[in-house]
Image 1 (cartoon, rainbow, N blue to C red):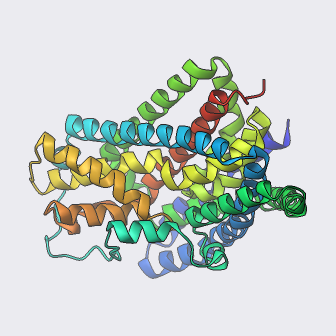
Image 2 (tube, rainbow, N blue to C red):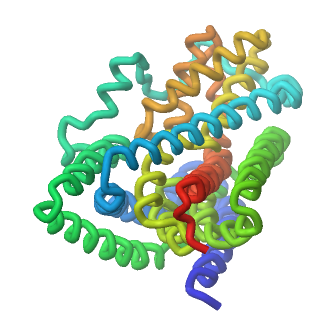
Length: 410
């Protein structure tokens, strides 16, 4: 058994053990204070792991992207690859949004669940981030690369890395030492990634134990229908993405799924796309995508191509509208899709970003923000699925662009 398969097995075992531990503790110590203390204490292990992952991401993105762009050699290549990537990102985002809209209209979960809705004036407890063109554009460009790295602002790091990589390529031999240093840093950070991933099963165990002890298995029955419908939507999205991938690279799609199963399971169990980033990068290179493409597309994807999150935004927004008996016309729903398409791009790096975007969108269509309270209890369970889907979307995007560029190795 390879080391990758061993890690996948241990993560799966940790998930099952975490669920069992959480359920057992909840049955043994049902008082809220004890459950909260248990959840807070055991989730420290998950927090440590996620902090270690966040520690890796900024230097990994910076080093790999600078090297990748420098190896591309010129602005024409960067522009061509970036253009193809954005074409894929926009297309995939629209498919995700439309699929969420179609399914929520088909299943009508806001009506069929019959949940008591909160008062329209109730607060969801989420911070608001006003969206406008100025805010979005200025957020893209860093005022300090140190600040961008400290805050893990992936999009800002990408902008700086692009400029530095192009400058290194343009200066030739004088830029070579920087490129070589970045190349060495990238390899070292991948080694650090391997060290951090060894503790992933412990983090997964703690994450599952904390969630089940806090929410209980009962929440799966209360919201089971809604959760099932949403996961069916994610499954359909996977099928669409993988069918397109199959049409472009053929039978190797099966090999790709095998390669990314490890980061997929990690993203699902920790409900964090970030946790899977280093492993996804590594596995895509092993699959045959060149470093220069992976290190360019993957960071962009984490800002522009979160397919699972996009589908959730329309699904959740229209679910809340249905719960409050607000009938939105097809035109209003399509307008909402376009709003979500734009606003989601300016909110990267904000905790619980999907919920923040949804809150802002609800206000634009006079839908009570308090409806988010219906989702907060199961948001973590839903986040697990959308995080895994984000990994699939970005992996497929990287492979497709590599194939379009004629650089996908066999």
